[in-house]
Every structure is written in structure tokens, then in C-alpha cells.
Amino acid sequence: MRKEHLTGIGLIAQERGRQVHEEGWTPEHDAKHTGGELAQAAAYYCCPDDNAENNLFPIDWSIEWAKREGFPTPTLRDLVKAGALIAAEIDRRLAAGGEVSS
Image (cartoon, rainbow, N blue to C red; front, side, top):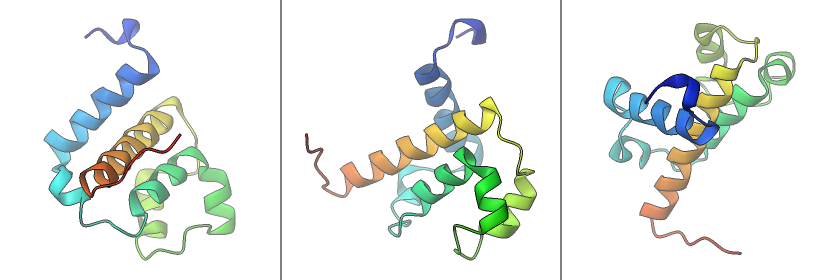
């Protein structure tokens, strides 16, 4: 797929594939994160300025992870990563027997 023809969904799918294949964040790995960590990580990518100033996510890895990732500069790349993390959380919940309510 050529980047200039990708949509937001396409970029998110591409990033999720990278997370699985390059980082090793497989569905089996994600299944271990039952405390909302994936959604929190996505929120961190969406609102890095708020997180850096207010320490909104007091989970152990948040501060060092944010520093390593170069926050607080929100970018299109950050939103793509956030979308992929949300997709991972949705997949994890569906695999755990969750249902989508309308």
C-alpha cells in the first residue's frame, strides 16, 4: 500500500501490523493487559500535553515510557499509534468474550 493513498483506518491497520510483527505485541501479549493499559497508552498518544503536565496515568511505566517516546509533541504519527492501540484493546476484549453493545 502506498502511503499517499492510505486512509486513517489504513494507517492504523499498518501500524497495528508493525506492532505485532516488529514489536512482538501479539494478541497473546495483549491478553495479559486486562487493566486498561492499552487504552491508557492510546490516550497517552492522543493527549500527550495533558499527560505530561498532569500525570493523568499513574501506571508504573507511564512516565519513563512517555520520556522514551519523546512526548509531549502530538503528531499524526501519535494518533496512528493511538488508533492501533485502541484496535488492540478492542481485539483483546472481543477475544476475552466481550460483546459490542449498540
